[in-house]
Image 1: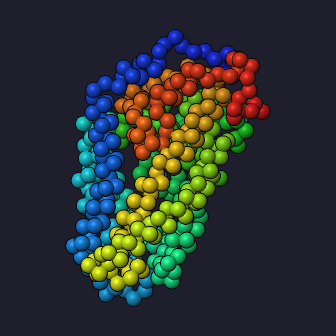
Image 2: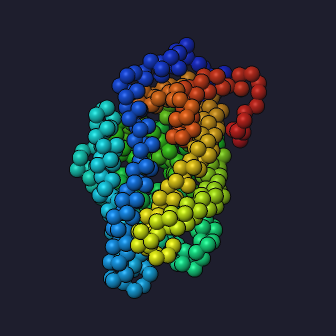
Image 3: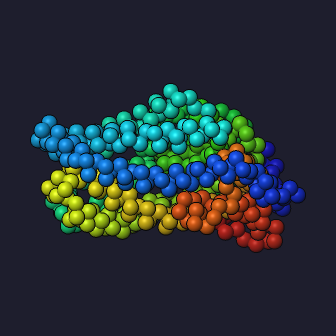
Length: 409
């Protein structure tokens, strides 16, 4: 039980060479899978930009604007009509790439359990949520009103509104959006739930919800995460993780997620997002103005607030976000590393942590030691080789040294 494992003052580290096992498990099949994933992740934004340019240069965006204006005089109705046509077109154009990345590739390498009909249903739900979400159209209508009223400084006002919108999204995601795609139930293993709540009490965390989610209907991969805040905050463990990880490994993973709560990572990330939005939207404004000066007449765009300019804004935001991605990834990797440290300090179970990371590497076909440029551009978690090294070597309590984060209560 948890109390017994936590009673050990000295970390037990197995003689197994976990790092060597992780490297050995990364075989030619896993290399091929990750190579394709890297190409797809780099191609995705480029593909989105090309799709936007296609709608602009073919005049489709301008025609959608004309349809929207003919169907409604109110800004809200025009935005609703245009965005429905625009987003549905992008959805249909992007279907082949999405099908290959999300369904075909995962099945090819034995990682998906989802049926084709299930994938289609999820895709349609995602599109319907994008169009029919209560907040999307009003926010877009408000944004277009800001662009119309402040053609030179719209980016400043929209950036200022990013933080409250992000806070609302984080609050609502676990209780409104996530249940549309998966079934969340309280953790069924009573003994494990008791141990997790005992761990939370040691961390000084008020009793929080611990859920399991039926990801086995979609994938064989393993994961767990923390989401929401306040009343909506919860720790979520994939049922695949519950099936294939041992109890002490799950407790370490849960301790890691508790670290995110104790170290206020959600709020720090939101604050960084709110501050970074000013730089991102400023750059997007410069790019948008440049695009419109060069091609606005050819695209049939009459002014920045013209609905036909929506793809221009989307392209500019994509480029600006790509520029900001390495910085956001670096922040995320730092927070994940600190949560790893916290998990080790509260459980003092180095061996369980190393085994958990090894299973993540093996079952998810993860690259344990990716090239540096891939880490910078694509990794929002530390590579698993680094996490295994930390699990093996970090145990200050054995030397009488203080913890970095966890303070016993």
